[in-house]
Image (cartoon, rainbow, N blue to C red; front, side):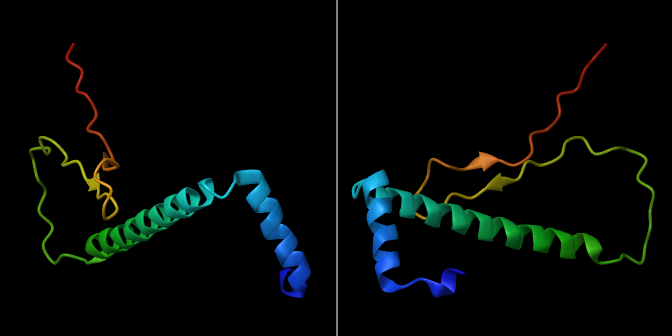
Length: 98
């Protein structure tokens, strides 16, 4: 259905988009979309790398009697040129003492 659009229909769609959002906001929206796509791509690569690292079998299985003290927090890297958007991925759970 999308492949059947005629040039006049495409121009009409672009005109409606310009009227709705305005010419000033379109570059900002495109920039935000690009940043989101970069973050999504880097997270997908990180997930594949994490899956590959955990999927490799080890020949030695040793039971660790002491539980790990704390889990390291992984941070999402900001997009190039954007230093304010890095955030922790998983926060350590608070320990409750009774």
